[in-house]
Length: 309
Image 1 (spheres, helix red, strand yellow):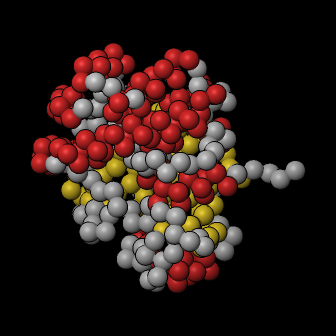
Image 2 (cartoon, rainbow, N blue to C red):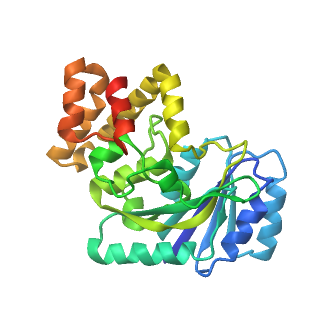
């Protein structure tokens, strides 16, 4: 019988030569080193492969390089990797950040503390980050505070409406991995889907400390946005924001379809009500939002939701 590995770090890369070596250095300088690093290359055409092979020479037993046959995109790259690997714990890793020395140990300690209470349930953990510019100069000491997220509100109703999890800080356990199956195209982000699974079938913990330097640069797929910029953008692009909200409802519908038989009656009703928001009338949409607590973080965001729907 094959023994399951302890901890896998899953790194998704695509043309990441600029910052990749710094990120790899930070991982292998962490205080906790009982892990394997699986790197999934989504079709890089720059020097990414060369950099990875050099690092493999330094850590031949601990870096496993996967070259995707075709471009999957960041969401499928992360989730399909998690689904095919077998470990006690999994961490997501971007190619351009810089992990603080205590990141792995602190996250794992917090995870195992939650598992002691949650027994064999799916558990996901996420934390905070220091926001930096491209040269790792700190811009903000807290991504969560700068974004004004209510990080503690990770019940299913809140997570259907708003993702709280910062993917590059996420760890989840084997019980959660076992809940993963097919990954429909309606998934908004990989960390959001992990959060929904944890909220529906287990528990989510927020580790209130910075775990990494969250680098912001011109090639970020998902970057940091200040609360002021967030509000300004929403006011200037109401039409597109309404479409984003409806895409979030489509994600909920896909989640309901994927996990229908595993959800309890109350959960099915909750998710169905959220997924059906685009088809209900003006009054019912607002009634369901208030009744079920489909809220975002803060008054301004929620006023925006009520305006958009």
